[in-house]
Image (tube, rainbow, N blue to C red; front, side, top):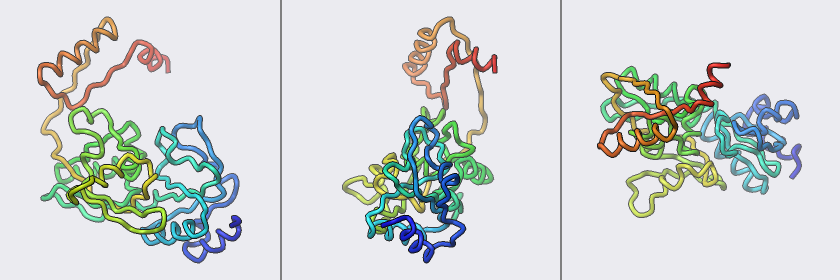
Length: 260
């Protein structure tokens, strides 16, 4: 099916202004944060709700046209690269925090919610969203789910999969499926998280929130060698201590920062 034929069908589902087929506009979506790998997409759809995702996926499934989901495009694994002429389904406009439940320490969100925005919304209630990748100010929670993101604090709190209670996903044929960690049997929720969108597109998720720490202490320690610093980390862990985060900067990195 040609681009014009696909576009005509899509215009029956979403407004024309949210269907991008201009070559220059589409070029902005040819890669994610890993710019070494690029693809070429014939079109980009700016989707705003679950129903749009479902209906658009059904069109692509019926016509045999490839597609790939995209959030903020901050990933470094190439998961959002439109290979083989795939259309891009951009869900970053689906950014509602549908429900915040401080008592249950949970939130129900759409995939386009920015990680840091969720954390700030939770902070009002003395809570936080633990996964904190370096792109926290820009990355989406849907992207965190797709990549099973971590961050400095994953040493103590674990990766994203530990903080997702359930996921609503749209499969490649448009079927909507709710994946819950308490389903029993095979952990489909766990299998979905980190699959980079290959199993489906997240359209809603229930996330676990944790209490914010009452106080924070930060230590900066200098070592004569990288080996010595690694030995220190091993010693800390061996003693049963659980720092919230541990980060290291080698000499080359420090010199680069100082020179910038």
